[in-house]
Length: 429
Ligand code: ATP
Ligand code: MG
Image 1 (cartoon, rainbow, N blue to C red):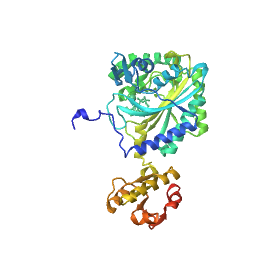
Image 2: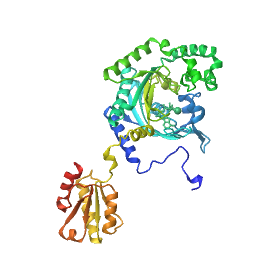
Image 3: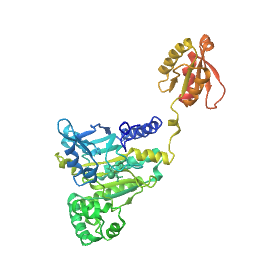
């Protein structure tokens, strides 16, 4: 196929055989968030470029080199959203949802766009489920966000494969004091730092802590530690969070180098990481951003949230073979009809059954075909049973019910009794 007719590198189709797992995952998360009292919000995929520059920060990987930015026909600079927090804050402010200290517990789902080097677990269009909470400033809500993700990992069967890393970044004042100390220390050992870190030392020194370079990591061993610079309020907040996680029985490790890529975090930051996915090990990341709303022109409003990468979690489910049996099967019953009169009766019968059993996954054969070919399709559909309706069955107002997965003999069922019968052997069984 010519290149211009192919999908863009790093932007993937989710094929019909993959969508059941996606929908399973999405429905698990959305039900869980509903149950914890979070409400869904939907924002546009495109925003003014300025929004991301202002909120994410000019000196971040995202804004410096990852955004899909273009001019529209009005000459406005627009950007495909690289993450959800900025747009969520914009929407909340635009609609006055946090006015008067109103609490908001929100979540969203959708595609995000970053021009990164595509590899396993890293794509240019990827999908996140994100949660943002406004106007709650205690550690209890930080803990709730972690508790609910912990429950999700349990429900998905991947709890043993993820670990929680925690840190506190303090208030922006505490961080400024720390930054000064870090810059002083790193400047004294400038020649030992890798080139990227030397550059970051000027533009965004905390990001040096994030380095993957072994020599720079060695220099960091003796660097000042952020925890030693924490202000009293942040320290108490962090202790409160840890006490709650202990009470909930959620294991964690403190990672003093965890600073997160985005500028807007303060106090709590956390990541759920796994060693099952190679280099792309973070499946969910978040933290507190008490200064962001004000920075974007709103009244001082605390905020805390996280985002999880759906592709990485789907890869986890596949790698750990945590794919529930019920999603492997998409069809319960496949109805085969032979001859035009039987086809007409089959349509009416199947609609009656659907009225009575709205959850039944009943597929009716389309395109006619011989006994053999319809049976083959019934089997291939994955259905538990085939229903058979030919001239003989039509005359007697019955159907044949043939088990396709080795559960007993074929039976003959009267049309009137069909729904009741299917209810016992398929819907509940
Ligand atoms: P990373 O360090 O892996 O680049 P990040 O810090 O840039 O991650 P966030 O902006 O915090 O990521 O996004 C939250 C989550 O979204 C990540 O933990 C990850 O699961 C997922 N994610 C981020 N970028 C990508 C991507 N390019 N492809 C797939 N998933 C991604
Ligand atoms: Mg990144």
